[in-house]
Image (cartoon, rainbow over all chains, first blue to last red; front, side):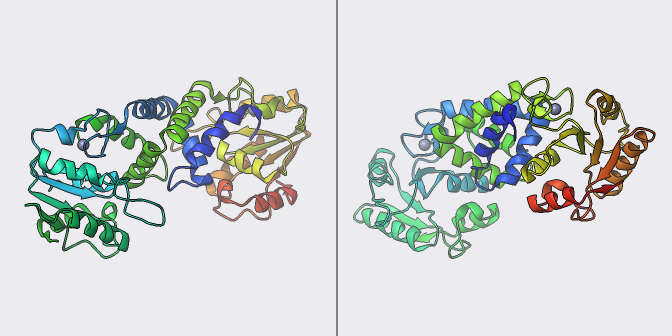
Length: 199
Length: 199
Ligand SMILES: [Zn+2]
Ligand SMILES: [Zn+2]
């Protein structure tokens, strides 16, 4: 790569930092972009800039949003009595694609981990508890992965609900052990949600 | 995906059009970018914009460049007596990574194809012939894939050299049949170049 292509190399290096892209696929992607300058490269630059400038975490639920509070939290079409707790936004998107859940979300942004010093505060659990009264929540659905970390976190949250008149359920049938929501097909998620059981 | 995330969805759709990325990996890439807004997303937007604004085809060789004539064509460190003919810029990059070739390039941008109406003009072959005298070329190395299309194109170019005092060689040993240069490791390309034979 020669002098005048230094910015092309810089672009390749940035692309190679995306998950799923290595140096070779980053090079191919950049050549493809160069060939499709008007149709793809410039629109992609604009879209990245717009999202980078506008995106933030929803103050209420932690979803990515371009407004202070996200569209799901403000939508009048969503049930206010149900909160589905997910580990990250990818899981929220997977739930939304299934089209089955009509309530709201709470995005933890991770799981409890003593090793990584991730405690309840880091996961926004106090914020979740605040929402329960404020939003008149009757059911909290724990849609966390069936992993040690996911279930430890689920149990911790369920414990915080003790003594409140709130049903705590978890996704049941259909979530494979060790499986992450984002990798499940929409039908599996729908079935798991419909068959949710008391936690 | 809800109202306020329409620009996030637009970004995912654009990312999914990159080679090697499908809808799922595009979603993962976008979430990764959102998490790394300052370190990755904004720099990537800037890099894409810079390259989109500055990149063009080198008027001499067809390489991607940010100047009218690319750095390889203008470099005083490159031999002017040798031109390596490649199908596309990915192949030029692969040759450069091998570090063995010190001459210049000619990027065809494709192979001859009656079906797709790709003739010599579309591949810049007249421009290649113009360069021979102007640059005092003594050797043309045909670094084209060992495919029917690649070899048809190579033979056509070799025929145009008849009657000129120019050696026409091709990459030999090490280029697997049906193999594209961009998929070869650097050592293989180096070996093929060193062992090039008269065409
Ligand atoms: Zn929200
Ligand atoms: Zn050039």
